[in-house]
Amino acid sequence: MKEIGAKDDFVVFDKEQALASIRKSKVYGWTQASAIQCWPSVAELRTKSEETLSKLRIKKVEWWTTINESICSIRLTLNDGTVSPQIGTRYCVNKSFDFPQEKPITTIRVRADGGSCVNQLEFLDKYGELIYQIIGYDSGDWHSIEVKDGETFIGFQETHSEIKLRAIGFLTMKQKD
Image 1 (tube, rainbow, N blue to C red):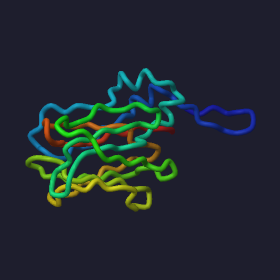
Image 2 (cartoon, one colour; image 1 turned 120 degrees about the vertical axis):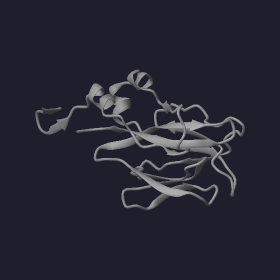
Image 3 (cartoon, rainbow, N blue to C red; image 1 turned 135 degrees about the horizontal axis):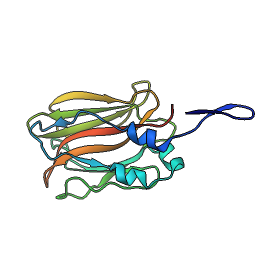
Image 4 (tube, one colour; image 1 turned 135 degrees about the vertical axis):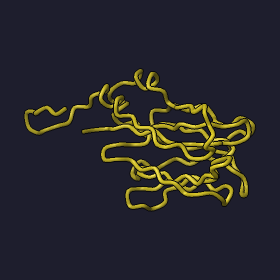
């Protein structure tokens, strides 16, 4: 929606349009997964102010894995301080990375073994340059999830067992027209 200001044109953020624009990517990993959980929920997002929602993005990722192991635990933090539940509960997250605000994530690459789990994640900027990588088991196919114009990554959808992340996809939301 566009309004004309006294001096300049400016874009007015519409909360309901933004919530309606939430897009769920394909989920990669264990292909037999039936119980896919999403975070944050639309109900959670609806409680946020328009100002907060218009700037929402993934700020931090925490995880637990070792080399030659799939990703066992993961947790995301949004830039407004909202923290996801820890996915995978056998091992507490013990590593973290704060994404720089000046390098928005535009692509997330998932390396997944279709039969069992998620092994690696890569976060890339608009130039295709690596921002950060979570390295686990060196196996599986790579899949890319990209934002569309005006979108940002705001959460995930997943399935897990007690000991590992079985499948993951990501949620995007349009930030502006």
